[in-house]
Amino acid sequence: MNKIIYYPSEKKYSTAGYSYPDPDNALELIRLANNCGINVQFNDIQSVKNPRFYICRGEGFLQLNRKNFFAVKIPDQVRPMLRYCSEIEVSIFGRNDSADTVYPRVEQVLRIPEYMLHDMTRHDQPRKPRDEVNAPSGYIHTHPAEIFYGWLAGTLDGEIVMEYRKEGEIFALVHDGNTMMLVSFFNEPESEWMATESENNDYPPLWFSAESYSRSPLYSVRCAAEYLRDRGLGRILPLVILSDHINIINARDMVDTWRESGVTVCYCSRKEEFIAPFAEGIEAAEFDHPEFLFLDYEEIQNVRKALHDFQDLRT
Amino acid sequence: METIDDNEMDGLCREMQTRFASRGMDLFTMLCFDDTQVPFALATDDCCFLVDRVRQSVIRDYYRLKLAAGKLAEKEPQARIFGILLVGSTQGIASEFLRFAGMNDIALLEPEKAGEFIEGKLAKTT
Image 1 (cartoon, chains in turn blue, red):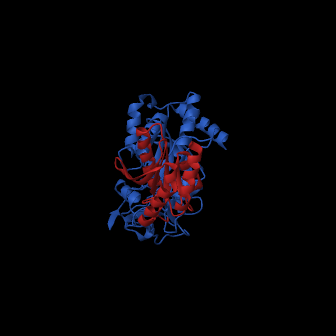
Image 2 (image 1 turned 90 degrees about the vertical axis):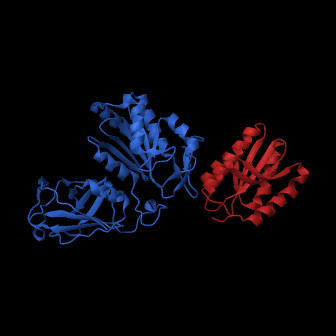
Image 3 (image 1 turned 135 degrees about the horizontal axis):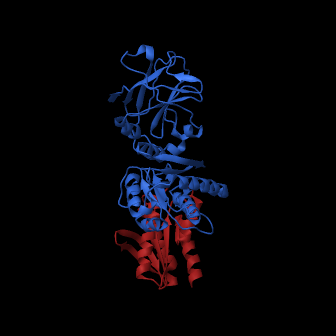
């Protein structure tokens, strides 16, 4: 069992009329331990009913009540555990019970939109079917969006400009400080997929598994990228990120089609002959498209507005 | 997923041979296309039916048969190539996939429907 004792420095913020920390509800994350399987424990929290701990976008959040969250800074050495291990034990103690030398860590009080709590919550309740991936036991599945956002948070100036969720699909406009990216994620529970990218009778291209099918994750980003390009907003990298458990059995046949469509298809961290991890894919795309580099914040806002219009057209 | 065993494949192979002998169809067994092997095929001069069964998964075996059909099409560009992938039951397979496979000339069929399928295609191509 890995144990990491973390003693962060004190920082104080005031939001929505509440000031943290204060003697009654000051909380501190003093131990974050990994033991194969999510199991969040809370001990001796004063003045708070049913506190919960979330991992979201690579960051930890402590929910005190319906609207108030503490952002808990997760030390770098713990991040790989959060990503790949299946149990995290979080012990939180009231200030009065902890050693004098340990200071409360309350970095920020956030208001997190409701939608972020649905898919991003990790706890030991039964998972939704979408999370039941065909993976070896002991492996906890992490949504590729969560992994990507975590990576983005680690970049110097990375930012999620907008995120759009519909029918289980997630699309995001982000930048890593260098390049604007339009990202879609593929996170179906089945592992084996056959990709197709040709439309049939005005039906969008489909990806097939043995028992189900899904609209090609490339299709939407490709359409959105074309829509933007038609409006003179072509300096954007379309990206599809596959969960690492997905096997595209015809990737060899699809790679040229993907390349021609201008969409970079990546895994989170897995590396295969035709599909690289997103960090490598982005680096290669930035090398191939130096014209994408150098962010223009006015352009980002124009893209954002155009994407809103694009979504309105689709709905 | 119900699969077809070796005995059923052998039985079907003999049955097809008998059924289509009078139509001038030749039977070929154990065809090799690079690293892909197809148990048997029935062929006329301008039409060929590659017949295989699901062994690993519907998707993977569909793809394997599609590759074999593609390789045969390269060798016999004038011939119409069809693939028949035998499954114990088509129940549980997404209808969209069945349709997609059909559009690519690969039919996912239960064994008892293979003869009828070949009859239908022969009627259209002759």
